[in-house]
Length: 348
Image (cartoon, rainbow, N blue to C red; front, side):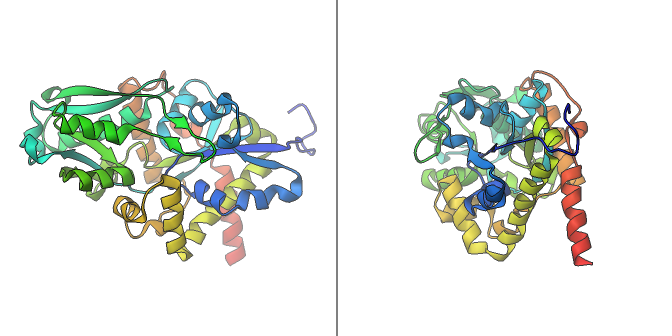
């Protein structure tokens, strides 16, 4: 920094974004905590979806905006880092979600081994910096094939081409046409099986009367369950961390607080996730379990870091990342450690 380190950089605006999935950042946002935290400092707090500039919206995927935080699926965050964006991971959250390989009864597929020689659908999303939906579907599909003793070469792959998701205003929903198009591919017999996830995936299974060949969420091995959404990193741009670590720590503290709040407010947490995912509470429970409120915590646990590193390796080997990078060096542990030290001292 060119200025005296004792004089904090003047910042009057910070941005944040979260994916339409359950995240502690999204929960803290819905509770209004970021506005409360910085109101007395004269710092404006804005979500990327409030901006009218498409460049702001793109930062949800490429993290190009300074003074910003992001929490969501890991592939865009990793892509941005591999592209040279100066970001750091300051927290991880792991919420296991419904992931499944499904087929329709008329396909004759009853178990995973029946996939040999059949067609698996993969979404291909136009216009994204990194096709995170395709990556997640490929990861889930390859996990299923491995469990069945099959390989990628034992099945045929069918691309389902999708348009770029749009940020809709004023509702601020991320419009996504993945599941209806995958359902059509099954109904029309163009595909024999597909990977689905989340509340929309659980609802689709029920509506189609589909056969669940593998419920990945139910698998006992966390590294089998790890995918684009587990764990989800919370990232911040390096400039803000360097210039105002106090702002980063205060923002992160409210995200950490959301985990404790959720533990004490299960019904409200369920309602928040339903709003965030634009799904009925029935399907939210089916996708995330009745103990959803217990999984809003933020950490940097070794298991989560190892799983994130394994997914990074998967993305790189399958061509989703433009280059490799040191994942552990990407993690900044200091802000979370400071918060945890403070809480330990307060409890002593």
